[in-house]
Length: 195
Image (cartoon, rainbow, N blue to C red; front, side, top):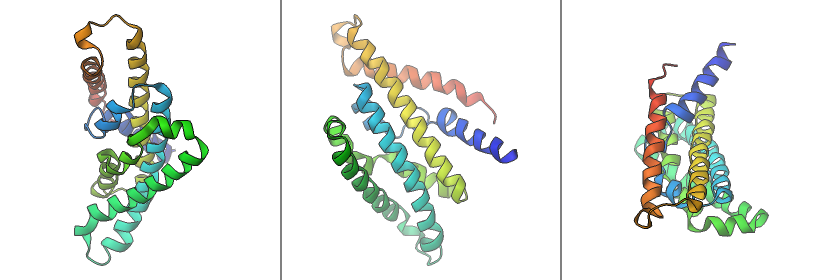
């Protein structure tokens, strides 16, 4: 029972309290760029969840059994980026084969997962926080779900704003940045939780 409680606490923390986009301000490029349409946001979110989860697992293994064992800790960033790049290539090929319309709608943002600092951030955070293998995988999964949550919420709001009467000077990016700031303030309310 204590295990389920710690998993629940990790989920709430990663999704709401320490959300990578709204609390740590990582991964803002796809957050703003892909959040125009709900379909694209869901597809990008699922791709990021997959990559974050696998990158967390593989980077933990690389750090533990390769870099730490041979005293190569200074290569951590390079090793993690190469791992993430390989995973993104795999995801890109799968999406291109199975969902060409989604692949086309994601455009340049799909390969940009490679340089998405949220994916690299969760991999490095797993090591610096001292998570074990299961904790690292679960933290990657929940961080990806938190990323997806805010991406889908932003896309839904932006789709609604397309039909709203917004002053001409505020249309497009200005209103998107205001909404992003308001969402960050709303998620800041979760930071008072003690889990």
